[in-house]
Length: 231
Image 1 (cartoon, rainbow, N blue to C red):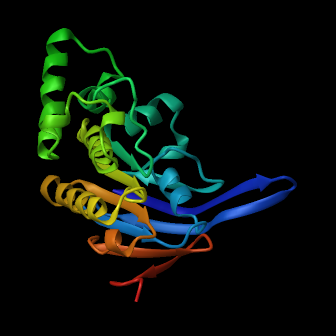
Image 2 (image 1 turned 180 degrees about the vertical axis):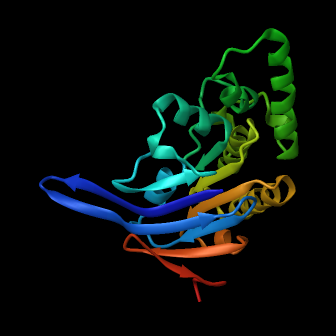
């Protein structure tokens, strides 16, 4: 369902060009789980942002069900990001003035919502928080939550619009080992139970080991896959 062909990405640093991605090809089947691993600076996050239509490649193209994302206008790309994609980042990006429940509802409130629909959305957000073990924390603001709790709220928010693809950028990077394991298990559980495609980038072997497919990126190039890229 998701295909990248010949992806390059070059940034200007002063009068020099910095090539971060060098002709990446990738296909991700519907319902698959894919981990892209590699050291810091290898191009993992840049690739994920391009796959998720958050950024454009310098050359090459990304296709979602044979639709080229870079050829779409801003409005349609934004709609795809909101309705078909979900995003979980290393930094939780929760809105501090809103409760956990209100933060989860945010993706569904981008468009005008009728009053009777708002009640259904509130119920859905509450159900997601319940599934993530946060019912007792639904009325708390982010500053009142632990790092692991904030990341679970961020995951619930990413799931609010029932995305077909969930993109995760170092989702356990700010968490202790125990909280990281909980987040890993939650992500792969939703991948299995909902048939949701999961694409994550990480330098953590603990997070990557649950994926059905592991790809290695080094110096902007995907070097193939193997069952244990850390051995």
